[in-house]
Image (cartoon, rainbow, N blue to C red):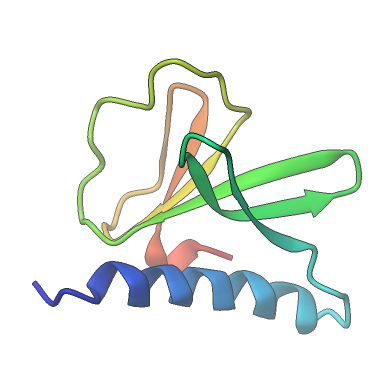
Length: 99
């Protein structure tokens, strides 16, 4: 596996989110977020009163565990696999359906 695969995949997901808004003539409300403990969100969509965290993972599978110790709102996880499903109240989408 190439050492930059994860960074390239994350850039792809961010650019697809950006294109989704730009193609509709809208300013993209995209942000990056990280707390003082190093926990981060790849893309934070600020849509009015809703903020949707989007994570990008280049792997073709999704690990069963989550991040213990803090609660997160409904998250969208875009990954390198092929299935589209819900896990513990979060949307898991394949890379080809990230918009």
